[in-house]
Image 1 (cartoon, one colour):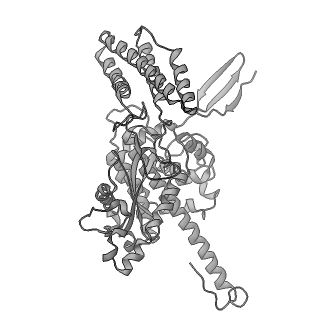
Image 2 (spheres, helix red, strand yellow):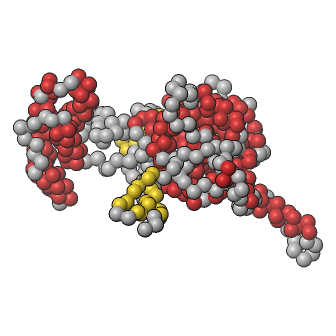
Length: 486
């Protein structure tokens, strides 16, 4: 019987399945492919991507404008070559940078951006492909490792080159970039809403799982009683029976303390490396056991101790759990020129100097230094050397021109809204404080990519209108008293 080859659409790892007589044979789909200039002989006669797509598409036009070679030169020192001769070759830097741009520009996960790349010829052309590819660009987990290798400085390079592209395309000029609007918001972490009953139960389950994984026999695991107590606490809180709820919470703390002390007594029989790994979780469980509602620096998620409770005065969400981030945009056109995280929930005014320092570093390629910073009243009482700070608290000393710039301060609010709704800033799934810093920079780079695509589409539409106006008599299409607004 002749072999039958078919493709199974598996989300995580697509595979080719070959059917022979009597057995199935699985072979993983090839995810590595040669660079664009090193095509196989059988691909030389395939139609090139530029002959299959509309070269006037904004993404195609932007791929010609982005300084890919300069980006590769900037990122290469941060990606040292491996000393060993073996191993697979690294993926092209343009491919990784393009996938990170597209991920945040189109609000996709690592898995989804690889799947969309596989079926979108415009995305493949944007990342430097010459012919249409029929296999995944990389494993989705590779993007996680590339982000870690790039670090915060590498992600800042991705953001800086979008600013350089906007300046090179004359979408913004140097004078516009010298005036910035600065504001802060909260980047929420991907955690469940923290409640005492749930956190105590999660900690108990984690300690029991660690003991089972390392062969430690506990006196009692409370595997039946623990989940029931967690459900009871939720029901009592919903019924506003707080005395009964607090009694259940005391019982949960007692159970967690017993499991914690039992595990601590039996750590001596483990290896030092294992004790060190378990000690991290024991410390978090002890911190959760002893914290009280009025304490500072509380633990809100067992797997994410860096999460902070931040209140920004919103009626819909009085408390947000994540990290404070600062955003700096150009005052006139809303291009992001700075984005970074500020762990520890500092006062907004204390973040201004660091935010402007980052903006100064991102704008150094276009030879611009921020001279005016427009802020809200949350930044009162802080000044930065060499930068004029404008806010309503200085009303008696402001000129009429400065008042006009202060009225532009609200322009940063829709930028933050689009960052959260369109570029994934509303929820961070990356691990740790470093993940928070990398995520906000990726969101800012994705927003600037959308900004550039929108500007290219607008410019193309404007040129079409101008061409139609020049080829059509004004008496038939354009009234004499009607001016063309750009």
